[in-house]
Length: 297
Image (cartoon, rainbow, N blue to C red):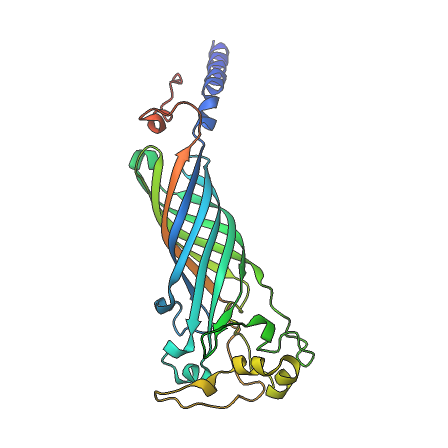
């Protein structure tokens, strides 16, 4: 009797699983949307981790795939700008160095989000995310007349020079690890708004073209010309204030610090449209898809 009962229960479980199987994939949706916010930088040209005086804009687009109520895959493209300058620091040594930079950032990322709550039930959920990204940058600065100067070709720290064989030219395309947190709000059945902050761990110390020490002035002059010397050290351009102009430092004098790599940060608002998942698009479609008529055991 018990054996027959067990077999009957097992058969019923199999039937229920077969009936309910479509509901598992039915809850998978796509999202397409945009990002608008700010970008910041952390590196050798700022005293604190992030200098808000050099906040710039960022903009992007993304697609997402909601696997279930808690897991979302994401892919996106983001453009931003970062900048920094010694002239706004308070440290005397940084003021004497008098360097500055700006750079565009193009990023393509692929990753996942973990949602802490069921968005359709609570209409709001915090989330965390992690990704892998490929990004490009190109540090530049302005001369005294306001003209843009590309810094990488100047080899300001002896990159690629025979006299400094261990200093290789840095790549303008790099890998970064984006991670951060945010919050999503369900505005309607289809529209989702959000806010997130994302930190980017990079593996380069040259977002700002500053990392190691000064190289010999005469060697730099012979290899790269007077323009390279002019922009490797700009302390002789300092005017006014309590800091006097200084001459080019000797070979090996500290210019930056390679103890930590540079970072960049994207912070802003998101807006996305949710679609797919099967079925119609009635007024309460997203809520109805969660209700199953599966028989109870």
